[in-house]
Image (cartoon, rainbow, N blue to C red; front, side, top):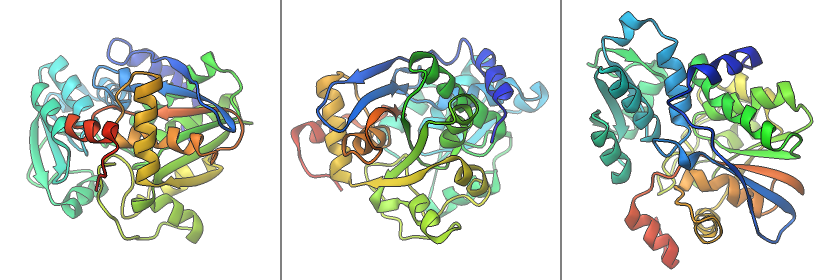
Length: 315
């Protein structure tokens, strides 16, 4: 658990990079009153700018001057590239081979250098906190305490707009977003239920909770590229497990329906991982009452987004 003081300090540190995003009501019929925290409206269209900014701005300037490095499916890559451009240093990003074109194009626009790796090698870079053959200050996309504290600022903002939500649903990738938001919520609103959600094709945290420890699962890549994995990161399990009430999963079809729903009702563009929490809340998996769905990002290939809006099948 990250101390609330660290999260409060991060809020000041990320000012000027991250923006305060709105919490808006999603008008739908169902068991819950759903509120969406729109991290799609960040400068890089995802929450990752928060953790990246806090990590880099709190680091030794001499280390940062060597250039920034990260391993990311695309959103942390953009956060790191954005900060690197601000500071005038290089940014090298390791991405999995299936990373969507929209995210790769965004990295290039921000001046980052992309290194494509097979999924297993990319995941190993996250585990090892280094990219083989690349020098520079490594910004861990998940487990760095400064990254987690930056993510936790979302929790502070939620509670300012909705002081006592019954539940908060958070898309789960590596666990850094969950650890940050849940730390803030446990400190300020301990009665609020905390749920994670993954695609059912890659629900590693669901499997870990069932087994009582991290376990390897069959991972099926899909258009929901920013959430789910073959296994929960070992160092994140003891951080996340005590903070959450349950781990949920939703189908790819439910996720696509949530993308369409938010486009229709809120007029926002949402990527697959960003729609998971809304999908779970709309399905009633987070219970009744006021439920906050963290819409983590909106970086999706427009061709994929168009197919979803048309109701066409996706892999």
